[in-house]
Image (cartoon, rainbow, N blue to C red):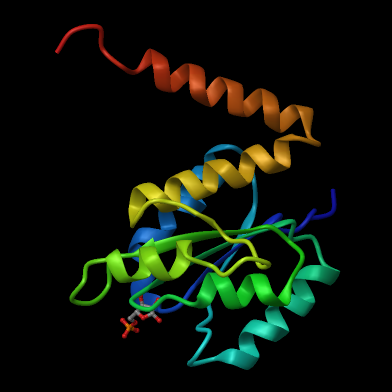
Length: 161
Ligand code: RP5
């Protein structure tokens, strides 16, 4: 069978962001959703970003997750260049431990939306799960896998400590 191609693009501003951002890839992989992770910086590699987004729009990518630290503008700039939904993950790089990235990512001026998640690994994981929920709107098999994921998660919580 032909490779259907990745449905989610996972962008991060630095290779140093991968430690947190791999939680998004892992969550998607557990749900059987292929993703394509790339190091793309809005300020260090701006052309790489526009090229990736052009190819994503023409290809199989349906949702983009963008994680960055410090004065994180990756998610906002990404959203400015595409109509695909952009899920932003603020990362704890630098002296302010992610608070700067949280504000930069969540406080988008009206007109270009970025759905913003929590700081770091948990935010990346939830962005992966949220991307899967978006894709599941038009994919009943994925919806089923998502339901099973939730059931397994509930079953793993002990009744007592
Ligand atoms: C951002 O600046 C990246 O997303 C990263 O979180 C932060 C620091 O980057 P490095 O100096 O570690 O490459 O662009």
